[in-house]
Length: 113
Length: 373
Image 1 (cartoon, each protein chain N blue to C red):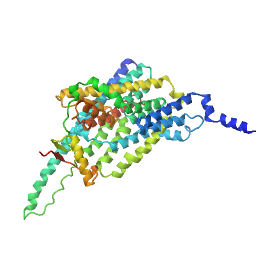
Image 2 (cartoon, one colour):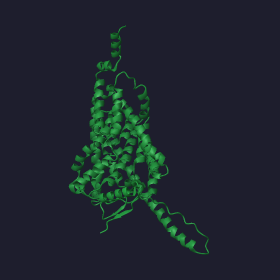
Image 3 (cartoon, rainbow over the protein chains, first blue to last red):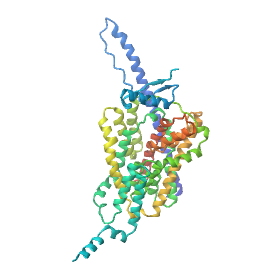
């Protein structure tokens, strides 16, 4: 393999990796936008359906179940609490309640002064 | 016939006589013992180092015939690229792509950290390696054992043990290899950068992600299917929440079984006659260079992102782009905390870290496309 060919292979390989991962970046952003739009539309549909069912003349309307939104541990909102303290709090709660950390979901931890 | 004749006959047919006949096997037994010490005593990637070392030991005990029987059949899983793909299935089931989905720009650092693959490839060519072998050596820089093994099994079977041992040794040595490079390429101010917490990732995004990645990546580079396809399948099993039993099997039982078979098979390929060569030493050195350049590549992209975002990205997370999950991310965390004790980079570094897994699979797929049959 000539030097030129070797360089072409190396540069194009590196470029392909970059392009592929940039494409994934784009895909992730698109997924996020699509999911957010879908969630917004289900949220607006739900309140709109509620007054309809409240009307005495209208037939009972079944509102669609709100989409399940799982929030995972490690992505909770911290207010004036550092991550180390938050980790300690979560561990203590898990220990006191005897519920494994994998089954607990923390949404936010706020420091009270 | 007398007792002396019987004893002499037993000795002549024993492995000891085989060692005297070809002392290189003795050297390989010592190499196996050193590797066992590294795995057990130093805890260098023990899950794989110990099976590999024991495979080396078994294959180099003369006159056992084990490499033609049991090991031969176990090795078929390596030759056909089955074990690395199954390890990726387990890896996918264990991996949380949340940090990557929350911060997709970290994909760039995962891409930058594949720089070492192509640098080592060029250096191997300069040293006179066949292009196929050079490609397999370069993939060591991806810091991903199964990927390196899969590529070597397709492109450079004769160098598979050296490549696998180099890859796993350096992965274990990441806490020693990376920090000096990280300190050399970043400033104190950059290392002190505290990153904001990433957004929450919905379950829907987590489920769509592996499906979308499989479709797009495999369609573009079909050779990545055994790695990316299985990695994403494993992740889908985890994220749906409906296949817990399958996810559990992929994460534990299956991965453990495959690792035993993979380690023994790879180690058993390191027979004295093909392992004790100058080429092995060259591969080990090239592997180190590949690791160093990959680390530097990730860090440099991290530095670019630090500038572009106006100091919101800590460049230290770039070095985690060299796959090696989660060891490389832990190194970023440790180095970040050394600069600023209030710095928690682990979750941020997991983004480039898992991006590196995809990046190295893509790079390996590219090499297979260019140099495969």
